[in-house]
Image (cartoon, rainbow, N blue to C red; front, side, top):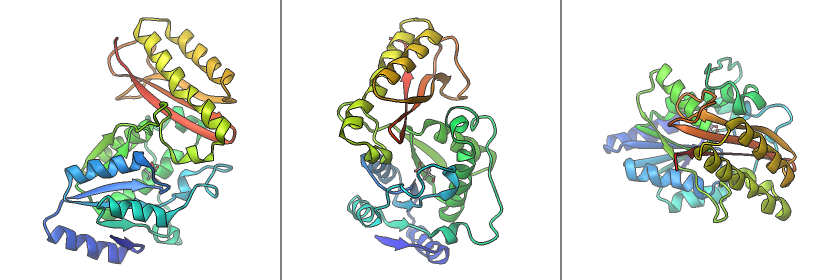
Length: 281
Ligand code: PAF
């Protein structure tokens, strides 16, 4: 597997892949890879002739006081995993390569970026949309793969790709969970043993709330009770616990098709997010 850090050699290596007639699947990541990322690689491998993964801890999507410096960086271990999974190329640019002196462009996706994580992390989705647009232009893939775990991010990227005429497929891949139900996340590494045991309340409470909503219960009451239950289970702050339309991310006050429950909550210094479909039982 080639590890490439500059744009000129990336373009040359991609030309070689395309010359071979391979379609290219892009798996963008910030590293600290886990089985969730590897399921994106697997989906890309099934759909495309060659897989290019990127690792770039994108500073512009972290707000002031967030975990940019603490974010786990383990490129050698990540590269070994990707190589074993058959990834052809790792695009791991430096910050200067992505944001050279004088960089002045910002992509802001209206509507979908508001509320939920956009409400609690102002500017976050501008940073995501800008770096993902750059990755799309740098790699020019036939398909790009993103986890449904970051459900709002996936919606923002789909909208950005539509609006800016990126023609390739954007593929969403189901969330991978630990056996107890906690969604895999690079940030789970911040949890100590006690917090890890408490964190399972998030998927548990979400599943219970989804079942209660699907059974026709009062939505606002269920959402309030769920937040109280999280706070009683070791989480100290709930950023949001909401029922939204899965396609538009509009708030859903009456249970209908395409309902999605989305939540973000803090345990210790770790902010966890999760989302699940709410389907009529
Ligand atoms: O989901 C992530 O890891 C990041 O937000 C992404 C899409 C790689 C952009 O930096």
